[in-house]
Length: 343
Image (cartoon, rainbow, N blue to C red):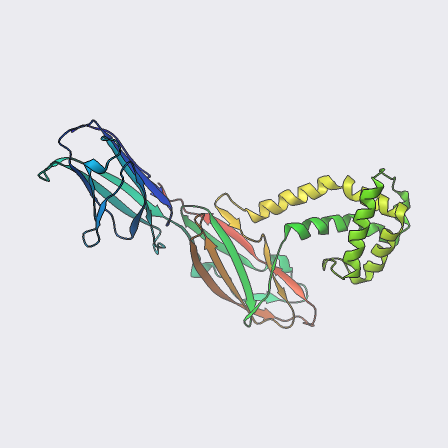
């Protein structure tokens, strides 16, 4: 029996499709094709056969030649239906071609692997107690080293808690863009300086629409928290003055390149490397009161939405600030390391 072509997908993630097929020169003696389905695999699609028999004890799949739609080709798509605990597993499928007396005419062996991303946080990578005093640079004190092993993109979600309360603050693209625009107009909130800016001739109907929406936001007290309350009256006065309003919106449009750059930088932060994506962008602990301990929980999933983790760590904090009534933010800085799995 002459086998012309054979193929199996060399790897897949859990619950991902693993297609395989075989092509041979037609032979009249062929009566049955058999192969053993490895444990925890399912067949999810038949290729060129109408039905098959599956023995659940031996896990042998049998296909009669009369059930083949064409007489020299067969294939299937299978999937591994559990979450891997280890970084990978290897499996083989032995396909046997039998005559009417169950004598083997030929066989082939196909090899595949199931793989997964795996994040490793070693004990030595967990920060020692972090120290906070009145002079501490909060942006640099919480640093983690995490190894990404295995294969596939890991989409990361980080949760930070203190005494059981979620204190995670995420960087939102929407708020990043609004904050950058707000920084552009903050110097103009004294009302007078905006008169030095030339009008850009914006459409009056568009200005009226934007004005109405912005005023509704102000009246409903829905301004983002980076706009200080003491500036709200100044913003309201700016928007109520038609000439200054047009110039203000013109400034925002003139700064659109800066906004786009902010967007790109945000995207880069959210995707620190090609195999790591942060679900909600950069994150920080949003804290108030005296701090004694932080709990960080890191969960992740692959591109098939298989969920892994979480990694948990408790970090001691030595807080010697003279006042602990102010709210503070401590960003998490993650150094991603890669240990490549060869496929």
